[in-house]
Length: 227
Image (cartoon, rainbow, N blue to C red; front, side, top):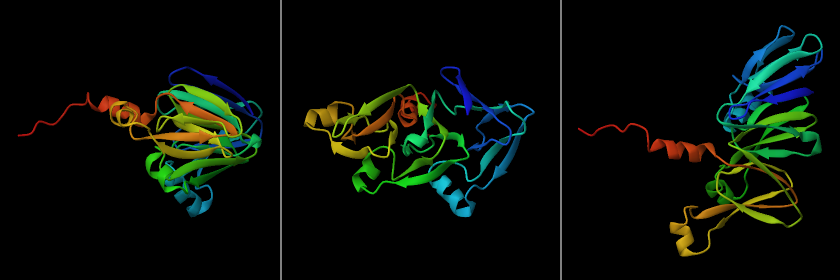
């Protein structure tokens, strides 16, 4: 798959397909395509697959794009300010935040990932249901704000602000821990819990979680006057 990521704050990815090469994307992600691309809307995986996508923050239907001739181009855009990250899932299964999936080669499997630890599901910032990408080929995910990649060694652990985990390799352990110290908990601004990631594996950290940005903007929204 030949691709180029363009732009900065609101990027798009242009993907060049060979004849009969096929990829799929979340509904509404396509920005433009040339005359050598055919578009179809399908319920990938049937009703059960559609329900799984709905639970993980995506639309029930997906759009398929097929190259009619070599070098057909289709472009997909970011939904909100951030980055588009290319990931070769042939190197290993990737777990992503809800809404992260943008598009992928047809040989990439999209599934849901369910947090089995109650604490991580309630307080980890990502909820119980996340997205899981496996199989072969390239996938593209959306990251809120800038993206910081870190490679964790075996047993290496980092603590991350809740909601700042964009994605991680399946071998990374995802958990939560309570912030230590009364002043840190109530005056430090990080809340009561932090997300912990323990290696080995790669993690993608996002600098501007959409839920945090929404909270910051909310204070500037017009308030209804009580009469």
